[in-house]
Length: 153
Image (cartoon, rainbow, N blue to C red):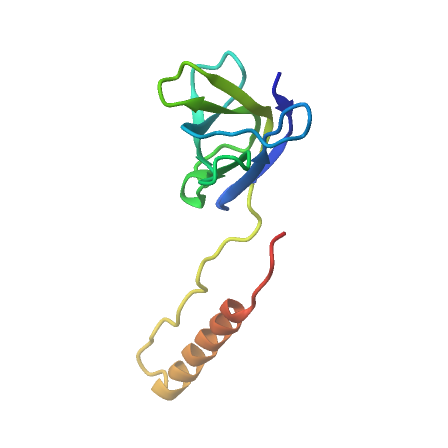
């Protein structure tokens, strides 16, 4: 029986999740020859796939690590909703499929929208130096915003 774990995906952001699959004694599973994938759907019986989750079994295979991600370019198109997801690990011929995890996928809207402020509308009769100074201030402010860094844990 798969573990149940609810996830939250913010539209327009890259989503990532790392799973560690172990046996009942806590020993990481050997996924040599296996791959991982997943889907998000409105519900268990839904025919529509909202997104495909890409999966990567850790190259060491014996670590039991499975990395799952959804790029920002795809999450931006998801509807704001509560959906269902699951992640499967399977061998190359599909004869062995292990449902690693499942749960609700809470898809939330993003708050920050990156859009440039309206650039100066050059008007006849407006001193050129004033327009250049204003544009220089806008560029400086954008550079300061881009220079800020943060850590996601």
